[in-house]
View (cartoon, rainbow, N blue to C red):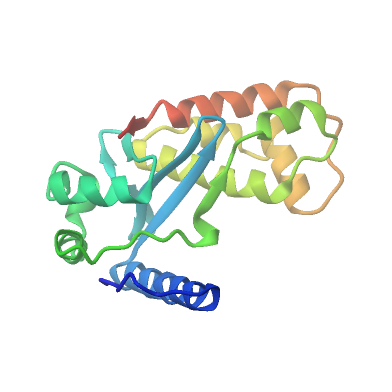
Length: 203
């Protein structure tokens, strides 16, 4: 996926970027791995995740997720360290990813469905009567995936519909009026965020 760099004009630039996005997303779909972006109060972090027999697998090992401040940093790490020592190395398509990275042909483009914006949600839970249901649902998916992969059921328990945060997420995603928030939901949310970011091995 190497591309020329000399195009001029706004229209050409936009067309080039759209082509690059389509090509990048098609590549990652073909290997069955998703680049993801996690936006926290400390900024953006990028990593990779796939589903192997319906179970989430992250770029990482031992419950620690390799995360990167930029997409380029992720690709550079793959070139130097990507061959072994992490759970995605067991993927049958992983050699294809490594070959593309080493040949300078790998582009990391995150599909919008794989962007997890958890920045500011804690404040919304404290200040808003109806937090953003989409953000809560997306983040819940991420918490559950990371917990399942790491063998930690804290997120599963916290997001159960019988628990305060779980009831809230269920209400806003089902478009029902949630109960009055009392701060419990925000406290549980913060614990989940802290638990997730504690898994980050930042590069």
